Length: 370
Image 1 (cartoon, helix red, strand yellow):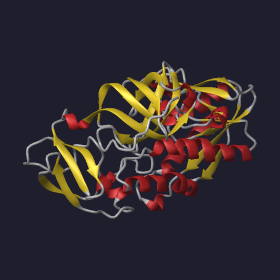
Image 2 (cartoon, helix red, strand yellow; image 1 turned 45 degrees about the horizontal axis):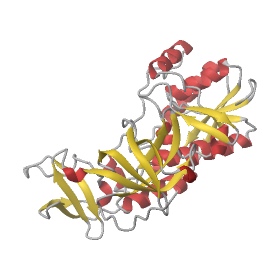
Image 3 (tube, rainbow, N blue to C red; image 1 turned 90 degrees about the vertical axis):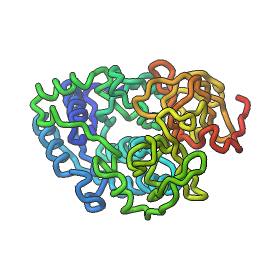
Image 4 (cartoon, rainbow, N blue to C red; image 1 turned 135 degrees about the horizontal axis):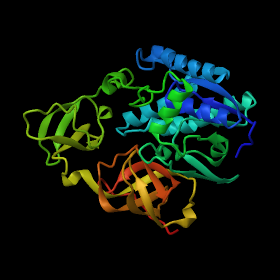
């Protein structure tokens, strides 16, 4: 995809994965330069994003490799294209996944734009994924290490973005990546992987979100209509959640099964396997396709409703605005706002935002012929 000797900008996060990506590209003969992206202003949420520490690790990697390190601040673009969308989804009672938007708009949007201004030929990151194909028909492939595969978060990339993207870790396991980093003398070879929502990090979710969304308390009700207590606002809960309900002494364990925005009610059920937590189908809209078109529907494939979930066999049917997904086996805790991502063996076909769970107000689903 890129001739040896071409100029590649590597997005360095301070973590071991992007560091080894840069190392491998240097070894392969490319002209490599690092770029440290600042996507969140620390003053917005003190203690959440340790940018200074991340930057120091990125600088040490570049010093070891003898390559330059650029800096770019994409925080304004992140706020406008990722964070504000997520806040709107939370306020609507849905549960967004900002990592998908971050990849599309920041890591392969803002980063590519900046790399073009620097005169680069491609950008690379530490994602575990692969790319095959040819111009205009690039295919997003699962990584060799199934436990680290990140195609779920990359399914919304366009053909133009895939043409720019390079994923040097496609064939490596995480254990091998750490070995390479140690041999290369990188200080971050054993650094802990980051966890949590990208703009929140490992900080308390409710505490962070309360800075931006005013709590709107309401009743916690059972599916039979019994009152159990008060919630602090539908935005602060997600389908399938158990912790944080504060329903001790009322039986249980209790799980969030649904939200009722019109009456500001949080609906809970008793037991991990309560039937109300399961559904055979969903509607997704909008849908982004990489290796499939709506003309090829209906289509059987496998899907994931969350990251690292085992593949689930399903049938995809077109609807007026997106697709209807019918699963062979009932799925637990399907969550509006999250993504359903489709696969054909090792190829990621694309995915869409879960908009509606069948069995919860099924009016309005209009199927169309392929």
